[in-house]
Image (cartoon, rainbow, N blue to C red; front, side):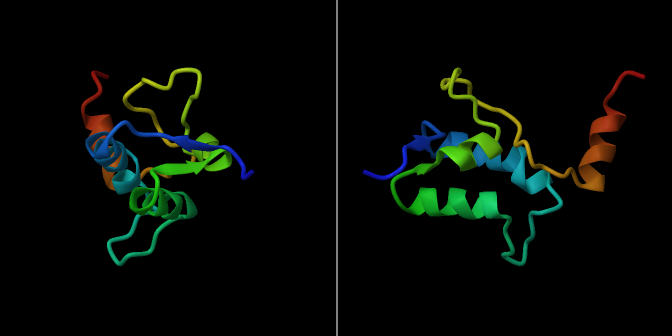
Length: 93
């Protein structure tokens, strides 16, 4: 029997929201099709059974103790300068 795998998202909409909040704000994300290892794992999951390895789930920031939590931050995200600036302008200080 293979290693246990994890289904991170309840549906495609949740996946798209997560990807927009993480991958598309990350320096590792590229419009030319270059993806980080974690995005590769999510892409394979999207086109197969919807699961990733437990190791990928951990690195993606998924908390199995709270599986119904809708969104979470990727532990390996490297914020783009544009996103950091946009975020900082909305802070009250």
